[in-house]
Image 1 (tube, rainbow, N blue to C red):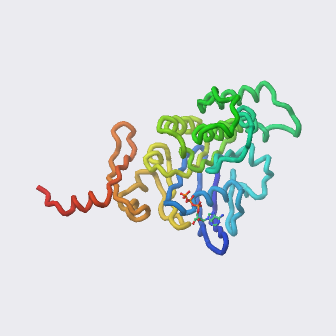
Image 2 (tube, rainbow, N blue to C red; image 1 turned 30 degrees about the vertical axis):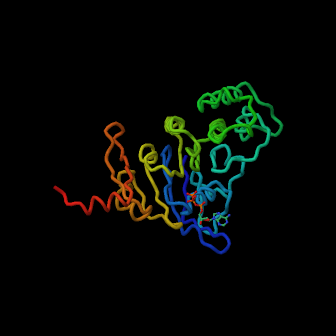
Image 3 (cartoon, helix red, strand yellow; image 1 turned 120 degrees about the vertical axis):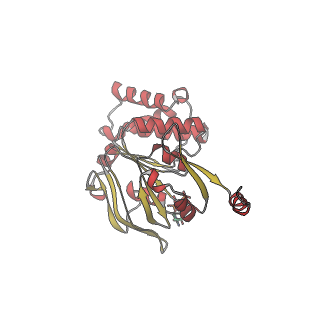
Length: 266
Ligand SMILES: Nc1ncnc2c1ncn2[C@@H]1O[C@H](COP(=O)(O)OP(=O)(O)OP(=O)(O)O)[C@@H](O)[C@H]1O
């Protein structure tokens, strides 16, 4: 299953936020969307999961216009973990994760043993089995995030959109979550701030700047010192990591780069 934005433009309050943005996520590809704050990553993803409607351009889920598909059919194929935590008051964690099964059921149909099994598996995969009877509102930010991921997994969609999935997670849970998503072999698009995480997990990366795609390619092609200077305004030393074989970025504050440049090399 594929997901594609074709020449998507979007404005809000007379401000154009996306300018003819095109990105394509191939079957089972892990695509990262990176860019500075306010560059339009969330807005693009919201257009891709139909929370917002493009002013022009189209979004295709499995080659079909998403606006011409029923909500139920989209929910069977596309799961979303958004940046915002929904206000879900006192739902228990297990009930919330069970909501992921809704697209697969008829109106008023009760959960079957299969559904319970899928929900238990999703709770286990995200490491929150011990929280199943807790109320959602009592959880920490990171725990809430993992519940939302579990709900998306219970949906068993082939395509998943993740808006900053590692936000709020400690480093162990960041890596566990990214490992888990990678091993599921889904079609994935994720907005990511951590460029080392993007380098480690993404097959392909798109870079957004002021609502335009300014660069795309493999992590090795995209994550260069020149791009980091130009788009993010930072100096970075980039090496291929000896364990992962992927680019590894070390950011260098401007004061150190100036110092290095001033000191004569021996
Ligand atoms: N509801 C809104 N009303 C007005 N402006 C908005 C609204 N939503 C987004 N914007 C503006 O659109 C631009 C893109 O925002 P968006 O959240 O898509 O960026 P982002 O790349 O996801 O940023 P971040 O990395 O900070 O999460 C920003 O300038 C933002 O202020």
